[in-house]
Length: 108
Image 1 (cartoon, helix red, strand yellow):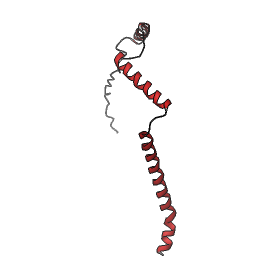
Image 2 (cartoon, one colour; image 1 turned 120 degrees about the horizontal axis):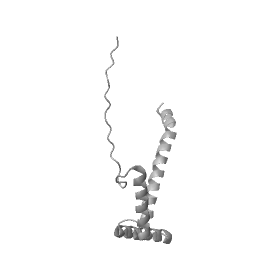
Image 3 (cartoon, helix red, strand yellow; image 1 turned 90 degrees about the vertical axis):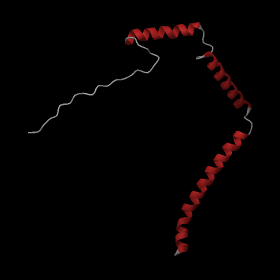
Image 4 (cartoon, one colour; image 1 turned 90 degrees about the horizontal axis):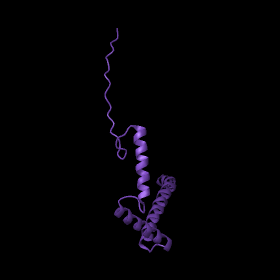
């Protein structure tokens, strides 16, 4: 009886153990890969990302944007303010919903 029950559970146990081993091997492969040196293309890409991050932080916005870019942004903001009635378009609007007054209906 016990042997028969174990033979029925064997495929389920095998599948569960197999899944756990695959997951663990996948995670250790990622961990070992991060410990190794990046290939040259990945290294160059990461360096460029870091360089862009430092440039954007120092510039306070878009990197290598001249006065023409800022003038175009201001022109577009002015057009939108005229079109949509003004206000500060650089922040998210505040919505205020008023609760409707409902009348109680009585049944006769």
